[in-house]
Amino acid sequence: AQSVTQLGSHVSVSEGALVLLRCNYSSSVPPYLFWYVQYPNQGLQLLLKYTSAATLVKGINGFEAEFKKSETSFHLTKPSAHMSDAAEYFCAVMGYGNKLVFGAGTILRVKS
Amino acid sequence: DAMVIQNPRYQVTQFGKPVTLSCSQTLNHNVMYWYQQKSSQAPKLLFHYYDKDFNNEADTPDNFQSRRPNTSFCFLDIRSPGLGDAAMYLCATSRGRTSQETQYFGPGTRLLVL
Image (cartoon, rainbow over all chains, first blue to last red; front, top):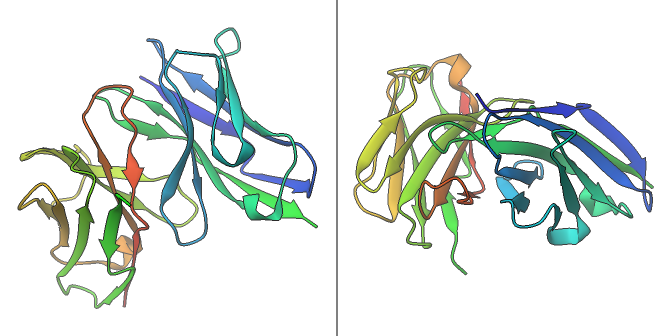
């Protein structure tokens, strides 16, 4: 069965610093992977998705993620954090029956 | 802009009093999903409709029901809310059910049970 593990339930960075949110997946088939962002009391917004076209995926708001099959990882990065990036981030894999399987989420805090 | 709309954004109900949450979409998508998200947890799929075909998750309590009267609207009915049903309820849509399909989420309805 497909699953994702997000390492670190909370990540804190300074404004302007690199953002790195970690996601490892488990899948018996080539995975389709997604990163979503959730601001407080809001729904989930798609940041980017990997569908095997390219290993480096660029998303909205300056985020990108690299698919590494050898490491079964799909980490999310942004070169320079902004205060508005403070939110919860969910990694997800498309699972059996074409259902999204979410990780537990990582709360990103950005310090001024 | 095409979008997923949920009403109301906040809903307060009493223990045991039936409540209905609403979702509408202007994307003309075939699939509509309902997720439950409890505090500090990932969203959990309750059920989904593919067109008129209803698909319930095995562990969704019988207390939760859904209706989809047309392509645009989908409702979540909680017949007898308990305190443990207090959560954010998220509606999502997708064009189809292939592996690459993106799910588009609404803003959610936060349910409080008194």
